[in-house]
Length: 317
Image (cartoon, rainbow, N blue to C red):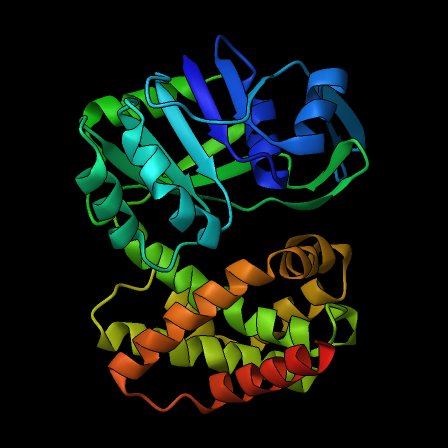
């Protein structure tokens, strides 16, 4: 299959590396020094947890032209950047597009891509739990041995042909695909989960090892508040059992989160992303505040965490 990975961050590089397996013809959109590094040295990834380094020969492009035809396009960029490239995706003739990553307004993204396009488009949404950072001419990536891609339609199942294309693309990779019918609810539920953790990250200058048990307790309470807010606006809490984990098993969730932020996983998955994605977190935060105003709900734990983070960010400037 002819596949484009639009975006060469940690997640995009890990995705491109896996998709190179089998009979896929993979191209990655990269720019500047990073593109030149891939062209010269290959796509170099240090897999932190697996204690190994891989090098893939991957074709690169700098710009997606209107007549570039791919069987699949995976857009793997920060949310604020996705909003900026919607016209480019709309102009391109490729039919199947998967927007991978955090997204506070997937309905808007799909509507704008389809409405601005002169060709038939089908849009899916995905999420991949990979963390890491770039280091010189390589990516350092942290993930479990079995990578997971949660993928699906906005509020519906994907068409048979779209799903078949995804199954074929991932057929010989280490990925396990989890099919989700309501990715809008999944993505909003995920933002409800990550923003409170991002708030304490900024409050602690991105050093989560300093997080206190009181802060972690506030995070868990804030997520539970956000779930109630989303339900009031009639968004489903996804995946299954996510709401129960924060509402009924809070002490267990607090212990798990506290342990995570004290380990390298907290640095790879949370701290590094927050440090390098202030624009994305700001965009997610702004749109989540819009939903809060719409719901008109009191969220004291959430507001406390957010206020402390905003003060810390202002002082840093």
